[in-house]
Image 1: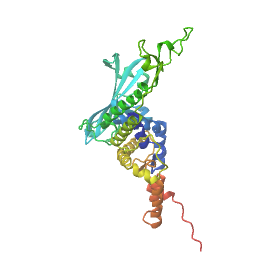
Image 2: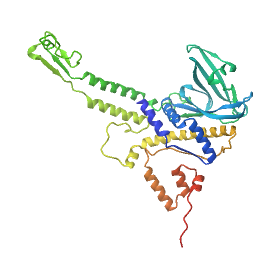
Image 3: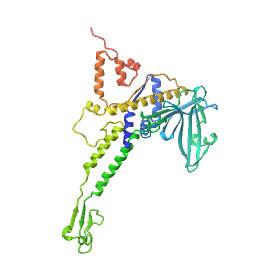
Length: 415
């Protein structure tokens, strides 16, 4: 169930229906190309799931195939990649009000059956400018002893051929984005890292495991058994009457009471199916409630009849509020990630607009009655309380300026 919870929140937060729209068309095409080249739709959903069970992930855009001078500045060329990092490889160094300003990330590589770890330190130097420092460690004995390689040594290894020891970003903004769930870390209040979606429901998960194991044992121990007299186990020719591998038939003891037991005695134990099913159903509701999905997210029965969209929204009001809460952080994360990509694109010589408006439209169709909401907006437009460009921007994933330009021309009024 921990895996299922993580999968579900990931699918709700970042799926194929999430629309990222930039006002500047050239910048939109460039950013979309970078995201596509880095498989962001697939990897983004994967790391939303990792975020759900670990609490924190990070996205680190970087330049590769770029020419870096000795002082660490980038002189020419380069493509933009995105490193995806999970919680166990994130080490915050400096933070304020939960926002990480300096951080160390680690990347594990295996080359010719030898283990290497790249340590990447994003820190602030004079005038508030960010620099990125890299170092590489080689595991010499198991996982207990490590040796730091020189830059000349690590450049002989394929994963680190183009790795620079120091890179100046030329920006006061960090070149990494920390993404976490919008849940207060009550395990370590001074830690900027997040917690898993089920962090405060571990007891319920353990109880569900115990109940499920008990349910399985109930069927294993409650199987039908037939006890037969020893003289009935063999035929007249000495061959076995029953299959010796059949677990249904058992032999009665030699001194059994023939008057009470008879030659065949059937034992058919009753199964406590309803009790186990009720216990599991209750704890699934408790788990769903603790994790923000409401009380009826996980049910085995199909329910009676079809439900209207309004009924579904009413039942999912808890999940809707939880989803909107997590989208608050995710929206800011995606905007920061896009700004970093644009900045790196400008560094590589592309004519991009760093200040372009960014609109991120999440997919809430599963828990929102989009049809009813859209119809209400249409009525607002006809009443004049909502402008056409506002309607188009909301429902077509465009900025207000784009929507204004894309509005169809008004038909000429016939005399």
